[in-house]
Image (cartoon, rainbow, N blue to C red; front, side):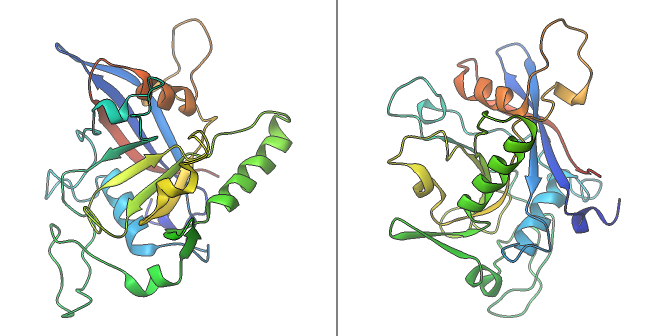
Length: 253
C-alpha cells in the first residue's frame, strides 16, 4: 500500500535460503520491526531506501533494485562455531543499487541510483555515544526496554534477544544498499554496542515472529520456527552462503 512507510507497525522481511552445491535450500523468514517515522531518531532516507529495495518497487525498470537474490557474506567470521572469529553480525551488500534518488549534499545535483547518498543533518540529530565511539538512529537501550516490556506482557521471565537491523553511515558501503543484522545482546560483553559503531539502527528483529519460509503454514509436524530460530540456524550452518530468496514490506495492524 502507498502509505506503508507512514505506518508505525511496518515490518520488513527476508525469506532466507542456504546455497548448497546443487540447490538453494529454503531456511525460513526473518521479520523486522522498523523504526517508525514519528520516532525522534528515525532516518527517513536510509529507512526509505531499505524499504524500497525490500519491496522491489523499482525492479520493473531496474532488475538490481531489490534485495531478492542478494547473498549475505559467508566466511569464518560469519559462522557461529564457538570460536573467537565470529563477529556477531551478518552483512548483505545488496546489488549496489539504491531504491531512492536524492540530491547531492555538496552540489545539489540529483544523484543516480548507483551513487551513494547521505543525510548529514538528520544523522547529526541521531547520534548515540558508545565506548568512545558513536552510532546513529534508534538507541540500543530503548529497543531492549521495548523488548523487555513486551516480554513482561506476553511471556514473563523469557528474555528476547536484541538483534538490530543497521545500515552503514561512515566507511565502506555508506549510502548504498548495504545493511547488517547485528546480534548485540547475544554477543560477549566486550563487543556489545561496539558492534554498532559508525552505523545506524533502523529496526530490530521480531524474534518471536513466525519464521516459516514464505510465511507458509508448514505441513510438517513439530513446532513452527521463530525468526530468532531462523537467524540462529543461519549463523550456525556450514553448508554455504545465506541468500535472500524473497523479501517485502508489510503493514501490521
